[in-house]
Image (cartoon, rainbow, N blue to C red; front, side):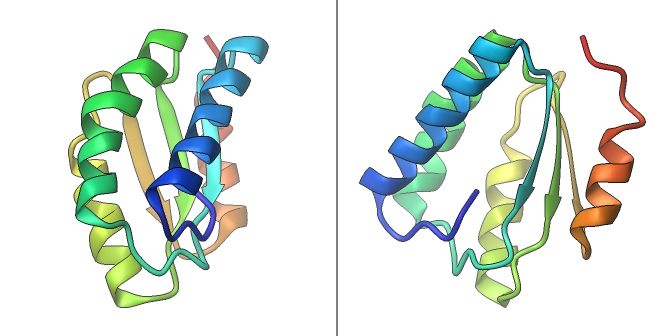
Length: 109
């Protein structure tokens, strides 16, 4: 996720990720959440109940993310990720290069 501060921008960005997952038959994604200040409660609920199921339906299975720089960014990102449905695996990293390296250990579907 990018530095997203409102529901409208959040939905546009994440809906574009869904399009990318579908159009490119992608099962693995990486993200740089460094600048993410926090994920608001309303957005957390939308991601868990709406976005996650649609992303899984496209074949998404693995995500590697660079941790947000802020405490509340890390806290709220973790709260969202806990809601990820099976069989999704999400792991956070201090450095984006580590995230990408870990992600490459999963074969594409």
